[in-house]
Length: 208
Ligand code: PRP
Ligand code: URA
Image 1: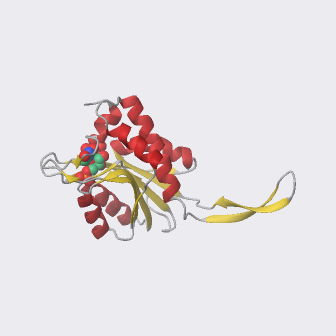
Image 2: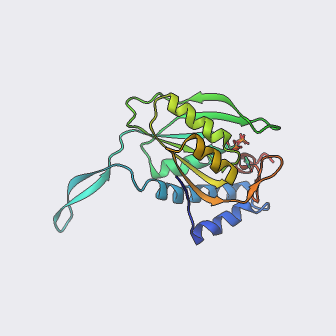
Image 3: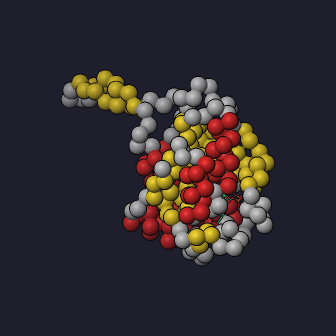
């Protein structure tokens, strides 16, 4: 399932992110803000439990998050840009890291680092974060690695998706929910998203 969020406050921020004149500091702030919106939408079905509480006025029953093991999995590099916002929303989450580099000519993902603890019982919720879903190779490979480690409940949050990436990801992982802030037109001949925002890692880290 691929959910494209549609909201004026998101569109406003996306337009600023896409602008080539937007400097890294503002770009990072926008990534943070958009990630909070994505988390809000993606986490609407997490497990909750009822608890008894007492307000200054009356006794009542409240609900609290009941997800003892959430693991955030940024795909290096650009996924790191979304991590602070996710930890802000889920302060007790654990963090695993997957390093993935696209081959410059073929856009095939080349995994170069993995530091993710194996799942203990399949009840864990793994949330993969990466701003860009272009060919879909990196995200699909990341989710395949998590499945091998025993994760069964997986979501993927990203900021801009290409139709080609959505199609590949849905074919490879129909069981994983994807939440994205924008579905763009297409990929260009260098496998960049059009209109996109360029290289997300370079824009976050100022390495243009
Ligand atoms: C970017 C992006 C994704 C990937 C998406 O990473 O952050 O991981 O490309 O492309 P795909 O859907 O075609 O796989 P990149 O390989 O440029 O590395 P970086 O984050 O280190 O810049
Ligand atoms: N990775 C990026 O950072 N941008 C694209 O447009 C495609 C892949």
